[in-house]
Length: 100
Image 1 (tube, rainbow, N blue to C red):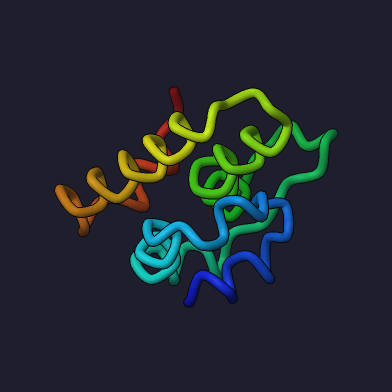
Image 2 (tube, helix red, strand yellow):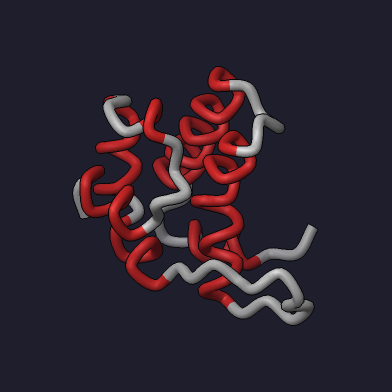
């Protein structure tokens, strides 16, 4: 997945992040999980795996869109996800599904 495909799939990603080099890396590394990710409805109480992928991967960018994260914080969150995946590539999806 490219960054363009990512922001097309998830239009809630703020425009000021679209040109960030880290977003291209994020889209490439998490292609498989992002392809499955689905935004849960507001009334969902039982989150499936695809909802958790969305909440953990795209969620920080959506929170930033509402002004609840700073730009620096959302970029830091993206970097943390990339670092965690790099350290644990075989178990990263399970980390996203872990509660708490």
